[in-house]
Length: 404
Image (cartoon, rainbow, N blue to C red; front, side, top):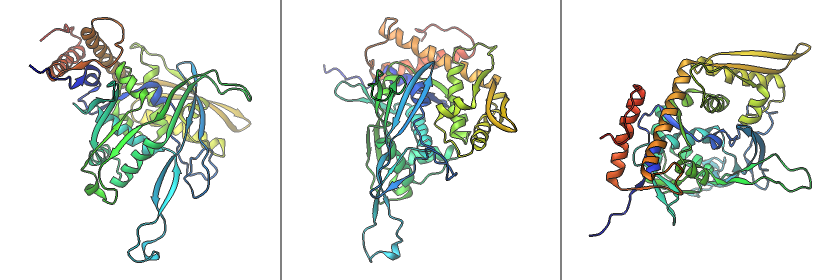
């Protein structure tokens, strides 16, 4: 009798979440300032402009901190082809479209598209393993599915824009290293945690000349980078509110929401307010700095106040440091709402359940060396056990893992 090969892995099943108001946060990767946000201020620093022809775009280099450790980030631009701005009636009749090669950094559009890809990856049976050692995580989808999900969360992009965003994410290289930048003339003592793109493998099968729905129905697949794949394998992800992330209009607000989700990960019901400075938000979120400090501080304050407006914070107290009449710095004291803290507890319950279910399979308290294969029947059984356990946890009722 021929043995049937495993069709999934326990960690891929545990990454699924049917509640579409939720997404998964992969802490270090999602808090790293990997995106370059273009400012409307012509004098803004670090804009990540598109550079054409023979110009050379320098990599964006940043430093940020996470859980008390210092990290360095390098973002290299993607090189893509775009249609020339030359109008069709200025070209020779029946001539092919003129393409211009440009270099561009992933920006807010790519941030939103990557978040939608993450949400789709949590759908049932969406992920699979690939690679010689079956240690790479692959996802199949269509461009139209991304467009439909974007519409559902009030974001609108054409199929061509989605295609371009995915291509930028697949070609823009990210390097995350430990430690601060080395002194001039000295070698760095840190090590690279990630040197890859968001999606190191991307195959878009539909024809690039088709537009709108015509070009979005054919199947596409991508691979997640090693840092994301390792986080899925080791269950180092936690549910956060996808609904809130998609409602927040500012990328700085989205970063701050993720930061608070990590900050309160171990907090109890009587969670204390968190103190954070405008300088810390500016440095670690990757936001642009305006030519005038007051404009930069205005944007930071608006991003903070947006969390109050959405009910994530109960209040955000501000302490101003002034030089004369000029505001030179702002410190914020952020008080989380009961609704936000319940979301954090909900994420913690899912994390705890995932860890316990995996331990029940591998039979030890340590992390497995790789993905744990499951057959179809085992995957169905695991989904059922987790659903019961989460329902019981929500009702504060203990249910044994082997309950049928």
